[in-house]
Amino acid sequence: MSRTAFVTGGTRGIGRAITERLVADGYKVAAGYAGNEAAAEACAKDLGVLIIKGNVGDFEACAAAVRKAEEALGPIDVLVNNAGITRDAMLHKMQLQQWNEVIQANLTSLFNMTRQVIDGMRERGFGRIVNISSINGQKGQMGQTNYSAAKAGLIGFTKALAQENAKKGITVNAIAPGYIDTEMVQAVPQNVLEGIISSIPVGRLGSASEIARCVAFLAADDAGFITGATLTVNGGQYIAT
Ligand code: CAA
Image (tube, rainbow, N blue to C red):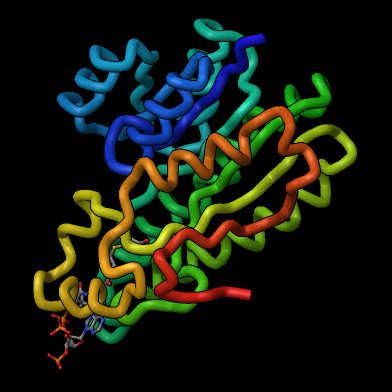
């Protein structure tokens, strides 16, 4: 049976690698995106997936996106809450807007998207929800009070939702990537990035495909006993218990 997945932020960076991996594994995939049309069209063309534009911070937009995906592909079995943004600044320089944008896109989005699919998953007795956190939600990061708070909050959301749905065949897990070679990480000031890379025991940035394989692992039908977990994937930079 071919399962259906929705990957938010699924047309660029880690999300694109997740989309690619799930397609390769035989899933029907809807890839959400916020505004980069060129990347979305390339994703649709290269991978043959359905691309759906919408803001994950907006509840009604999420409802519309999931409706569109389900009409085209069938009920969503796997939701990957991957979309995220950074608005880095030291707290003493951070504006309320930078705080709000990150909380909305990286944390409220989990409610907005998951609320659209959870009833169907419960009715069908199967679901896989994978939330993409970050090393910086686990250890904190200077310049990222907003992002670290959202990514840590996502782990709490994951644990609570896992408990609520364990009896319904639905697993809910988080992945906490370290620094992955994406546009988001390349936007970090070069001198700061060099310092970060030197603190990674494996000695390099991770690749998006290394996160995608973890999503595939957690999304699988035979991963039903793994729930409420956070999978740490950071090259040894932070060894979380
Ligand atoms: N590690 C070590 N030192 C850091 C640092 C970091 N991540 N970020 C900032 N610093 C240091 C700077 O080198 C600087 O030190 P000195 O005064 O000794 O030179 C000091 O902190 C102040 O930094 P800035 O002069 O850059 O101050 P600023 O106000 O202009 O900018 C900042 C601050 C916005 C935090 C900027 O330094 C920055 O963008 N840092 C990177 C933050 C970061 O790591 N973001 C992760 C983005 S990737 C991501 O989020 C994906 C993921 O999940 C891992």
